[in-house]
Image (cartoon, rainbow, N blue to C red):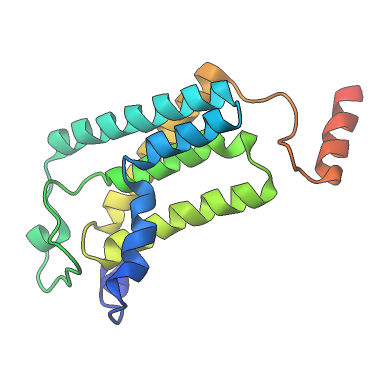
Length: 181
């Protein structure tokens, strides 16, 4: 029912959904790493490489293990927008990649950056169902895989000690007060 709710929405110009959907494309990984390097965030860059490449490869393994097709392979009357998706459906690699990247980058981002990261995840989640590429469970499974890999990378590499640059003063003051106490 959730898939039908999203997939049966009226058609929009394809570019409106295609562009944000590409935020989960594997090519976003090197772009994110380059952005981290440009800001001299070496540990963040390493974390993005590990999370992005790791979750992408792991999603391929899960797909081969589960071997479930795309929505048009398992349901009737699926509206496929754009090119017909190929390959296996569970888990969504797109949502796994953007979720892992967002989780790893989160501690380094200011408040507006965290909102942008959350919006990027949402901008991949719903359009993948809208174009007929994935079922809701594909998306939830991919997001869970991204969270697991991102959390593992954060556990291995750690996070910055202080508030991100650009964090509001109230957050920084509250954190400093807790350190003193």
